[in-house]
Image (cartoon, rainbow, N blue to C red; front, side, top):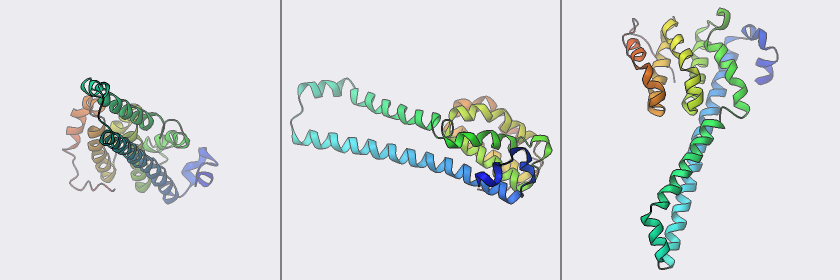
Length: 202
């Protein structure tokens, strides 16, 4: 797919809308599944450590040092450090520092409808969804593209695309509330959309 779509980036508009949409769907899906995988592995590691600690405590009497560490909350500090490390991986590695990162500018071009070349509905829907998935994974990506997302939401002619953006904004507000909060008034404006048929597609 990479070869067929990106061999000639300047003429991407000459590819069939369905091939571009499939490409966006795969890229966004890969990114989201990497997030799910990372979260699952992080939880698995945390549970393994917890079981190991419980097993060790059951086999021996806790020393005064262990008791003191518990009182000082060092276990909680270690857990917080683990969560921060996992958060850093999700924010900096999945879509910002690996193969998927090279596709972000392409998604931006599609969502921005560069030179009016990407007006096809299925391309609009697929590219918006893929970019929103990137934004749901990485706070940095979210902050980078919120202006584009709201510009698209305001000017988009296709109701289904506007619907997809509003649904995605709900996910973004849950995941990165501080980043989305300054845009709250723009979200409320779109809840009074002139179309009553904004059917978002998953």
